[in-house]
Image 1 (cartoon, rainbow, N blue to C red):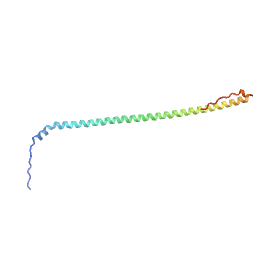
Image 2 (cartoon, rainbow, N blue to C red):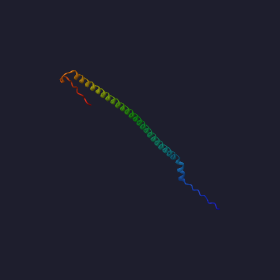
Image 3 (spheres, rainbow, N blue to C red):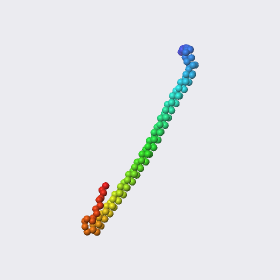
Image 4 (spheres, rainbow, N blue to C red):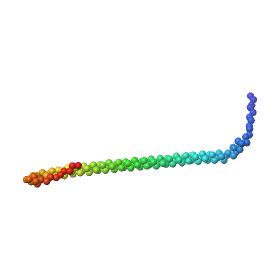
Length: 121
């Protein structure tokens, strides 16, 4: 088998680009690294904003739960107050009726009967 001849040609322009390109390639690597750092910094900043938002949402949810519990407590207390007032009103009605009956029994005439108005709520 015959061996093929290998022919080398010397390209002066390619040699110059290779020799002078060290600085260009190094600057290019630096530029790529800076861009990667910018992207990484943007992602970290976005992660920080996300963490702040999550923390804010968590605090807001806790606040809403506390406010809901306070509102329920206040409603419960208001209902207890309304119930107490109803009971007191019933007691007052019973006392008034008793007083009217006592007055009717003790008086001979209808003119001496004192009528007490009832308030309905």
